[in-house]
Amino acid sequence: MRDVDAQPVGGIARRLTGILKSRGIDPDAPVADDAEPSPALEAAQARIPARYQDAVADHPAVDAWVSEVAAAGRRGPDGSPGIAQGRSLLIVGTTGTGKTHQAYGAVRSLLSAGVRLRWKAITAADLYAELRPRQGCDGERELQDLARCPLLIIDDLGAAKASEWTEEITMRLIDRRYTQMLPTLVTTNLGMSDLRAHIGDRVASRLTEMTDKVILDGPDRRRALAAERRRLTAV
Image: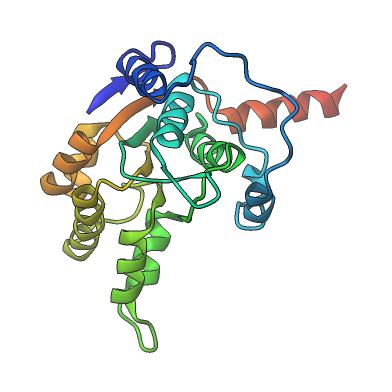
């Protein structure tokens, strides 16, 4: 795992520059600002939660990851790239620092770039709730669908109550994506030592190898926005 704080992008940017140059793309070329709206993005908006429908991946490391995934995609019959194997991201930060915002922003950026993309997003708590054995639910089929999805967001890993069953489910899901090198966006409030204690050594080991870690810091944005609304109301 490579750690990336709020400023330097380091190895991610250098690796991205090398990939772009090998494909004959000038990384310093200006980006046109008159691009047409992406039909794929417009279609995806219905699946993106309302709060994140305008999310932007503005953290340098997340933006670099988006560019790398887009550049590495396999070209389809129409010439547009499709998501391929690649690195994953572990976005770490305390409550309210914008982890989920960055994750959905990354999906929106990929779609805006014209990447053909099948993606799913789920919180860790909902993952376990949906897969828990119950009548009329094929949990195994749902697990395999998540495991094979080209891009998966797992939000708030480590927030749900842990058990031997949740650890095994997490292990099977992460191991499949680790083995197939499928890009995965994982967000968590926990540092690696606490996350390891929550999800187990086997899962933590795979996440360490398959992800670049992005650390978000700063105050709780939700509380800051609430305080600003109160201030404006009081004026």
